[in-house]
Amino acid sequence: MAALTRSAPSEQERLSYEMGLHNEQLKGRSIQKFFDINLDEAHHGFLLPDAFDVDFNKRAEIDASNMPAKEVNLRIRELMADGYGTIVIKNPGAKHSLAVGILNRLNLIIDGSLGYFGCGLIDGPNVRISGRVGWSCAENMMSGTILIEKNAGSQFGAAIRGGDLVCKGDVGSRTGIDMKGGNIIVGGNTGAFTGFMMQRGRMVICGNAGKNLGDSMYDGTIYIAGEPQSLGVDAVWGEVTDLDRKWLENKLRMYDVMPKGGIGAFRKIVAGKQLWNYDNLEPTEKKMVL
Image (cartoon, rainbow, N blue to C red):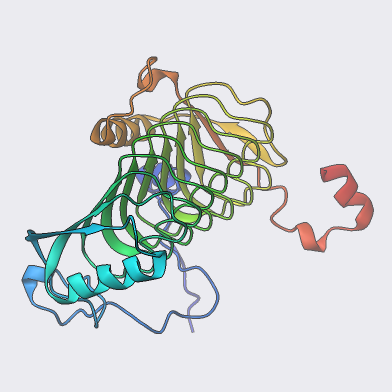
């Protein structure tokens, strides 16, 4: 039997791969709940099978001032079940774990600030937050968009897998820790260990970064317009291509977070790939890498 051969990638494919646009499947257990591809064309087949059919022109408000977080989250689900596609949360009061587990198309407007773990485990909604957010905002986000007008706490976008997560202000340390896909955009500065153990996706930092940027990153791309205090283990400078610049121009203008220096101010950080076989190294070799 003839051996299977694979043609060499084109220059466009190579540049796309370097930007983080990968098409191979990640290994591991399969997610058993898939999109329903049999839905009509109006829904484009990109909804979960039990998603609610909502109308963005149908609007409701929730006054969360005297409601616990669990009750607010249940009310969001009830309104989606009734077909409301635009929901405004008033007086969130920096409560923890608000607007979590939304697996649906939805325009969600949060008029105020969130506490810890806001908007976690979401898959599909478009969220706009007028205030600040605490630790671990958008943890395990799968798809959709989140736009935060002010600042964010540490572990912003932890383990994010898809969608656009945008903070116009500053964020804390460990932004994008264990990032597995999607895009994180920071309009200001970010703290230490940003991009720690990054596996996929793209991160854009319009300001400066703390120590150990991209530490132990396995793959993915970080763009920074300012200065990092230092690069982490196995994070190296890469070449910014025209494809990178076009993507940055589109994304940053979309969310109005262009830095003063423009697209030309950005530099690129990628994985040096010296840790890819880390577990196979001898103890003395590990010391040399670290």
